[in-house]
Amino acid sequence: MTDTVLSAPLAGAPIAESPMARAWRRLRRRKGAVLGLCVIALFALAAIFAPLIVPYNPIAQGWTSVRQAPSWAHIFGTDDVGRDVLSRVIYGTRASLFAGVISVSIALSIGIPLGLVAGYRGGFIDALLSRITDAMLACPFIILAIALAAFLGPSLGNAMIAIGITTTPIFIRLTRGQVMAVKVEEYIEAARVVGNPRWRIALVHILPNVMPALLVQATLSIAAAIIAEAALSFLGLGQQPPLPSWGSMLNAAQRFLTTAPWMAIWPGLAIFLSVLSFNLVGDGLRDALDPRER
Amino acid sequence: MLKFIGKRLLQLIPTLFFVSVLIFSLQHLLPGDPALVMAGEENDPAVVEQIRQQYHLDQPIPLQYVYWVKGILSGDLGESMRIKEPVLALILEKLPVTAQLACMAIIIALTIGISAGIISAVKKGTVWDYAANVFALWGISTPNFWLGIMLIFLFSVKLGWLPASGFVPLREDWQASLASTIMPAFVLGNAIAAILMRHTRSAMLQALESDYVRTARAKGLIERRIILKHALRNALTPVITLGALEFGTLLSGAVLTEQIFTIPGFGKLIVDAVFNRDYAVVQGVVLVTATTFIFLNLLADIAYHLVNPRLRGMA
Image 1 (cartoon, rainbow over the protein chains, first blue to last red):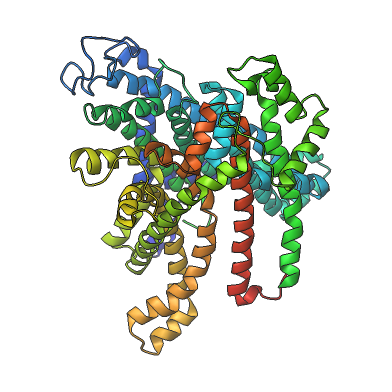
Image 2 (image 1 turned 30 degrees about the vertical axis):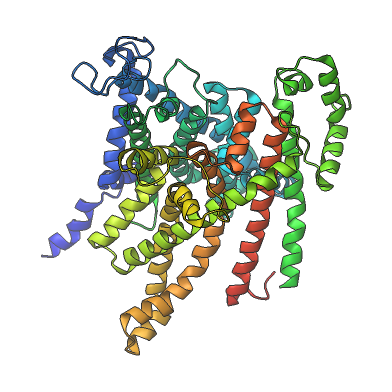
């Protein structure tokens, strides 16, 4: 009896478990997050192997197969100029995932250093960066992204830059807040006392502790960036025709709702599924990385 | 309280300054000579020269900014290149349309979001809670332009119940007006309902576990009274203030929703301006939305201080 009581916690949770392993173990317990990860993996595979798995050339027009309903030859049907919708949805994965990941990477690479500096140094530089962040966050996300994309000129690359810049203030603010909470901890004080230079304290001691919150936000931001890219492409400010993207496919589909509704269903479903998956993983990560939960 | 309002008003000044710098710098992102790009199709040197004069593009950039801000402070947001009308007049003309849409969307969002949030918190862990959470996740993950297209397909193309596009002002024919705006208002309200549901749920859960609810229960009050009078009243304060911050989501959503339902509002104005390379209009719309958002934020902050007795007297 005594033996079981003593050994139970040891068997359940090994003492030497690293924070990463613990987070991964907790994440795997959440069905939604696991499902989300699987769907993201499928989309990623589709994007990487697109040329190998598409049944047709996604930009080859066919005047004899215009707006054909789904059939065995074209599982998702064909569009207004006879292109295979399935092939275009698969290739569209590239634009969407790429835009999601790249624009959030842009936001992270600008937001983390600025947030670190603002949170760690404080003073004038913090006040300045905080006001700039406030100003950017005051402009509604999509409206600022549209304005930036419009002034930069329509292309997928510029759409990614526009979304990336618009997402940056979220990461500046988040990093700053986290750094301010962490920098007063005793282990940071200890690192300072033993004579570590400032940059080393910021990068080696503070940054790793800020990472979990950033990871959660980055996952949720990828979801928002995928919607934003689709929105910009829908408006003609993202991926340019004839290259496929889910947003521009929806734009074309809108004109043929009465005769070819399948044109609107599949790209929309693809956006929904990918965004849902990133949201599920983000929510799961938030719970898994929360130190209050066991 | 006055001290608090004064302090917050002072904080607005640098924020508004950076907003104006941000929007002013947009025109310098234009590739090449801004005057040439702004003139668009018209390559007439006289027109280009007129634009250069009008925007003081021949002056140094800081001076251009001063002229620009001076204009804004006197109510001059520039002139639309295409329609040859003042930007401010265009915005004021479109504002009532979007305002009607936004009001309807907020009513829909509050009704769905708060009731779903209450049910999910009160019935925590049941199938109701699960359903409400699925609804919230669906609402956050559905792109509103796709939802709009699907609703048009269902209610206009298949069932023929509602008009697919267009807008009838409330004053002309209220029934036709409601019919033309109910779908776009739902599309707009849907995402915000999801966010409000999550806020309401967590605030209600917190309230239901609080001491005053335990006291109310101990007094033997009926459960419905406890939920609606004691818990909800306290839970709603953060929900309403956080809800005010969703104004940006509302306007962002309006851009695409108005585009899909061909509603001549604020959102369609910016999209049309982008297509027509009418840059002054784009800048004007961003400026007005950002400024409105900043002031709404301030009002929400003040309201929060007013209703939260613990914060009163703290500046």
